[in-house]
Image (tube, rainbow, N blue to C red; front, top):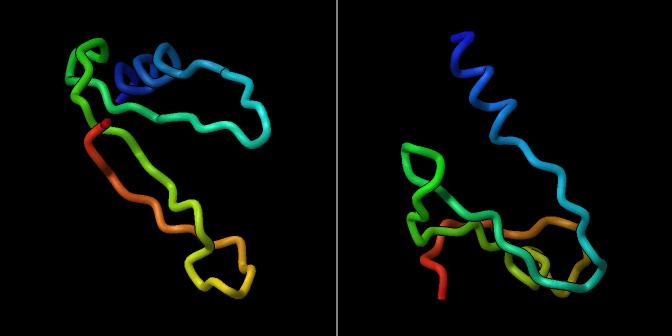
Length: 64
């Protein structure tokens, strides 16, 4: 468990984001370096549109 915690701390990286710009959270392979081609994608439309709830669907997709 301690080794996993150390690996997680090494893998974390702070990145500043700009308003109204797209970004990806990419999945890496077991070695933490090899791209898998998978990304987390958040919907651009509120899940309960036309209401504004701040809830958006998130899915695992292949990067286009």
